[in-house]
Length: 391
Image 1: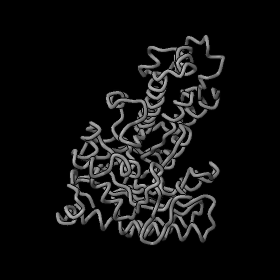
Image 2: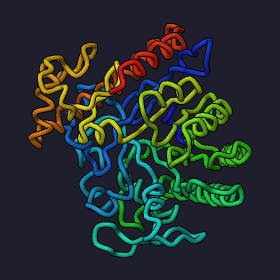
Image 3: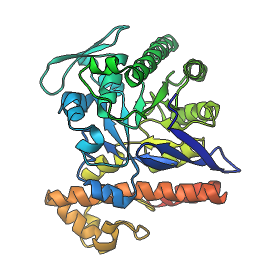
Image 4: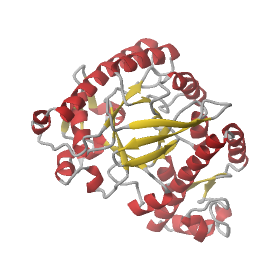
């Protein structure tokens, strides 16, 4: 286990499982619950690192699969690791590449050893295993490393889900063993041609089991036997009904260790996040703030605003009258609509900045409500306002 990585629970909501805490990493402290903007290729799309810092981001996500293919993990390693490469001094979590490989269903072949896949860039063949994923993430030097897993497809039969979680468990054991070797045996690292740029990496295990609660419990038992710095819930938001997703989260999150961070991978909407916080989740990531922004959708405290709609052509109001971000302080819905309709690059920057700032401000409000013991009241009010103003 990583000795420098730590999680401290600071407050708990009396009416729900929600909790506020603090994660310690080599690159700073992270207040939880936390949302991670997604920087797939070492960049949160359309935003500079300064914008992210000013918006309050203290943890971002990088993608192992994409960075391995381009520019290459050894290139990044030679340049001092991902933090230095992208000039980001705050914390970074890297996913394992498992989800991206899962999404390449027609271009991959899975065995017990790992997954052979075809690059979406040039068609070249590659092989990704638990050991290889750990080597890539060690080369990147992220603060939080995710075990290599198989993201269980949906729908899946109980037998298929069980087989998936069992191989994920075996891969989790191999992931931990290899990362430990890289951190403790100089020859293990030098043999791969990389330098260890962050000796204080933490490793998270990933819970699988599809929508079957008994399999989710079985998966968690296996992960606890291995032992990790944190625990994630994977294999959700992949096509199942929202009610099924929340049933899994509400069932398994409270069963995860109280003294470790709990991470819900790839989720989600503001509604999803506030409801998952009520189940005891501490960490979130999703591409929605930036992807939806580029497609003309703004998140606001009164619901979503689709700026492409003609009704905003003469609207002088900011995107969100309750928002304190630089975009809402200066620009109107009418101007943002004009930029979008004109395909101006500035639109992507301004809309992405607002959406990311809205998500991060929502997390700050959640943390404050938990600390004050009023989170449940905040949640109901927040969800009511969102529902009232949907575009």
